[in-house]
Image (cartoon, rainbow, N blue to C red; front, side, top):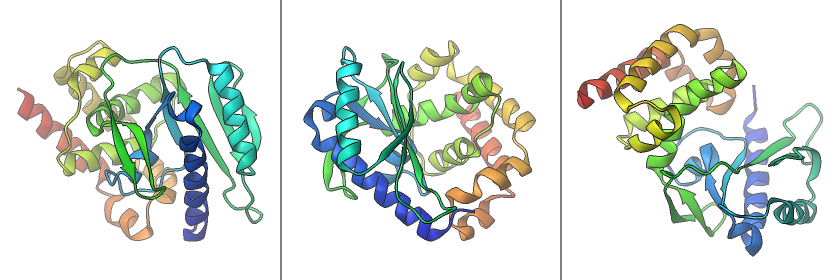
Length: 243
């Protein structure tokens, strides 16, 4: 279980690195912030998120940007443990006590979806403005991510389910066009498939093992036994609304 001190240290490292990336004009003008950390910083999400995720601007020179990323990592005293040679993906190590969380990932997706939408947003935790995916875009990607992750890696990420639950509870909208672009299916039949997928593949064991480190113990205990059934209920209510 990740401790509160580890989460605070990790958040500080995320903030420090994000600040450095946004201060680098060549990087800042070529990326769009997204994902769980972006959602949390914008107040859309209430869980711990461990990575920095971005979309790459169409036409950006990846290899020139790679050198810019390297320079920011060096400036922030982050060691590159591993990196992809094909895409801009980095695993970075920061100083931490033994046997505690000490690694963060930076992932820059170079696949451009035509239905992605972005807007300039102020990020209070780093006192900077960034081009971010809209919440409607992020919600649509999250609805697809749960099944997509399983089809590619045969793994279930209960954080995907938690985020879907949280977004529905808070009344956020999602881009239907993006769901169809990514899946080739209209929203209604896709959501029906998503219900069946959650019923079949999400287990209490997976929730207990993988979601706990991302929530305070109080939040985790409150949601862990009902997350599956509540999320299915919320998706079914959305299905009724779409009919």
